[in-house]
View 1 (tube, rainbow, N blue to C red):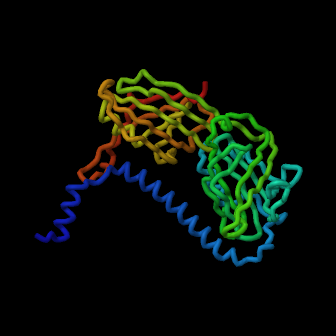
View 2 (spheres, rainbow, N blue to C red):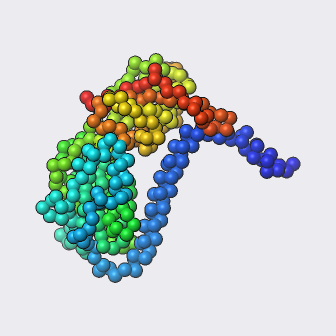
View 3 (cartoon, helix red, strand yellow):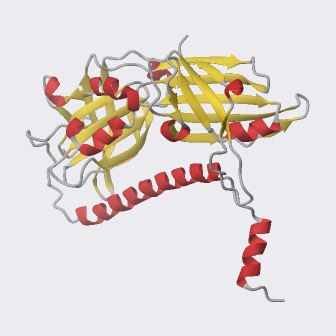
Length: 352
């Protein structure tokens, strides 16, 4: 028997109910981020196709009058996104004009033979233990980096390369520091090595060094939270900096409804002064493992990773306050159904 469209749609809805709106929001955020990354990669690959036609002797060099990255609109948007930490972060930026010499990216010498030299200059650099951002100026629109960046010989992860403003010739390069030893190290210089593509299929290692007393380490702490009536945090680790707070939680939860509430990170965050942020204000990303029921301990276990922006990095504590919401039959959140579970709040110590 052939099913018409309406019957087919109804059958789909019965067989595959809609996911909760909170989950859809998180997926939508990640999809948008991935689309932006993909769009950027496509644009870079398109540029590579045309740039391959350029003379190999084309020299990419910083004009002395290039505007500082801190004055570009896209950078200001990033700075504004740090909320209360924006002022602190801005003070950590090292401008090339503050150093004795221009910060040049030079090709690394391999086996005593210097590679063919292309010139790049770093206009500004920012480092806070969790994040390295450096801005590279060129007179040509060809600029691409490999995925790994070495900071003081430690492998770190390139997040993106993007032109700060169309036609500016200044590219923002963001790197996440993932090594815990490097995160907490007190340093007064950065030696950075990165693979730079000088043609569509040619990559050379370039290095630059920045010395400054502005560089700071990220704060780290760990602990447990066991005085909860619905479960406990077996362990947590937290890294705190002006650019981002990374929080890893290992949960044991005794109440199934609390698993659903906690899993998607719908928290209100409160700092030590009482200032609160909703998840729309602080959430950069939330990841959770698949919950597993432990028959022996009669609890559900899962891990959770929160990437948090805009939370006061000088706060001594972070309170996570769960929020319960109600869903309709279609899986959409019922307006004004939020209930803030003050009695289920969890306090994380950010400093020892």
